[in-house]
Picture 1 (cartoon, helix red, strand yellow):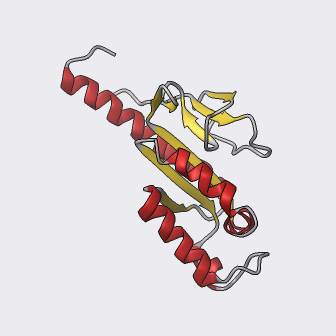
Picture 2 (cartoon, one colour; picture 1 turned 180 degrees about the vertical axis):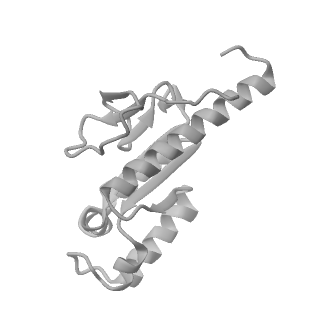
Length: 159
C-alpha cells in the first residue's frame, strides 16, 4: 500500500489571512518569490516547480483594474514555475452576475482569466470560498508530491 504524502505547505509571509489547512499538513511561513502558497523545496527560484496564487473575487477584480500592471508582472514570475495555479475564492457564476465590487465588466473579468490561462499557463481554479480554496491547495500539493515520488521511482532515485 502506498504511503500517504503530506507535503510541507509554504504560506507567503505577506498573506494577511492565510488559508486554514487540515492538521495533517505541516505548514511553514516563509517569503515566496511570487504567489501565496507553495511546497517546501519546490517553490523558489532554485527549483520553480509549484506555486499557487490565491484571490478573492473582489481582489481579483482589483488586480485586473487599478493593479493590472503589478499583477501581470507577478504573473510573469508565476510563468517560470512548472505548475502555477490561480485559485479563486468564488464561483464562476458570481462573475457572470457581477457579484463583486468593481466597475470592470463580467466579460472583461472572464476574458482576462482566459489571457492568464493562455499567455501565462496559469490553471484557473474556482474554489467557491476560503474552505474550498484550502481543500484545493491541499489536493494540488499532494498530487504534485505524488508525481515527484513516482518520477523518482521511475528514475530509480531513492527518496
